[in-house]
Image: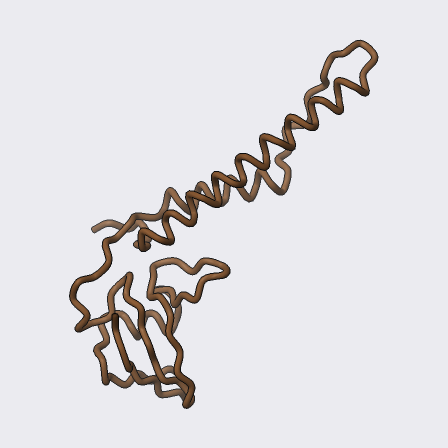
Length: 144
């Protein structure tokens, strides 16, 4: 069994693009730092900074580790049961909500992760199905 986190191609590409942007930003900052250091030193030598990672470097490392744990899954062709990659519309507390059902939550995306309490209940559910989550009843309206 594959234990890597299943994600849609869109989410996978989003993570790749974020890593690319962070790498470019880090390279620019490092270049600026080298120029500043060379200008500050009378002898023209550049002193290397400490081995401690900056917040930007830590963010980059975290994103790379996250991407390494992911595996792309194709868009489901069977819309009978909720699977990773489906768009799902539910009714919860009278409100209609639509989201992407995915293996990983990503900030800025309207996603329900398979590992969330709701996600664990939704995986494999069908249209018209009712799910109890705490004191709430959730109706699956559409899978696409």
